[in-house]
Length: 281
Image 1 (cartoon, rainbow, N blue to C red):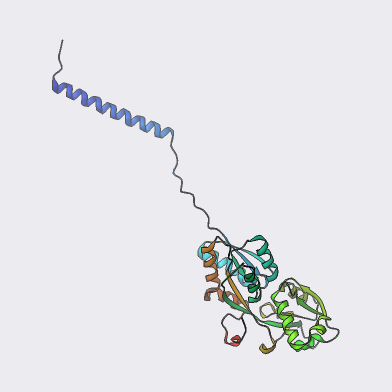
Image 2 (tube, rainbow, N blue to C red; image 1 turned 90 degrees about the horizontal axis):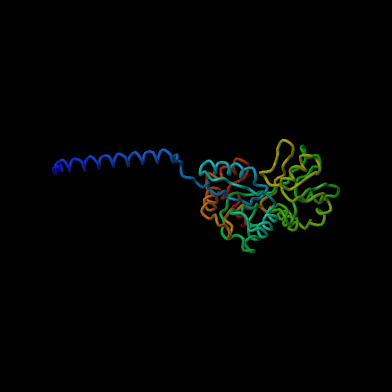
């Protein structure tokens, strides 16, 4: 029998190992080729939208703020607009909304008394004014004129709107509540509807806020600060939101100089303003 020398045996084993390694590598290549999984970018969760319960009279600046905030931070903003009283009722019933921004601190306090909100930032002033038809055909010059017999007066709902509540206080101070009430032809659930009523000529006069005046179709009668019920607009988080970081970020943006600039653009005096330093909050 022929014997294989030790060196030859070593070479043969080496060759065999190389062959096995190549075969294994090829098998691996074949297996990978047959089960190739394309590279996929890891899925990203879109940011949760911030939900804002907002007074209807604030819609113009807040719509623009929503767009600007979304572009700056990549976070969408969803608005639910309505009268302050209506929004408080909805929040209490549904426990929805991350941020609350009513027309005045009056609605804020109502929400706070029901455990819906706590702290707020102040943003702008809602300044009540009398609006009359263009040219002031009824010669209305003051609040007391709204008590004159025969006028058609439109006012905000006293339970749903900040402007409605402000009117109640102003008329009471002047002791003209009953006489004005005889002239009221409608009370609306939002301030926006008062503007529509004036634009369509359904009333001789209404009380709206300075930012809602359309100078093209109505004239403005200023109410002196001493007789006025100027409102301050707050913004803050709800107590039940789970979207706390985003809600806090939105509140900070709205109350920043950048956010307040949108209110100034739409005719709101922004907080603080020396002209209204004695206004009660």
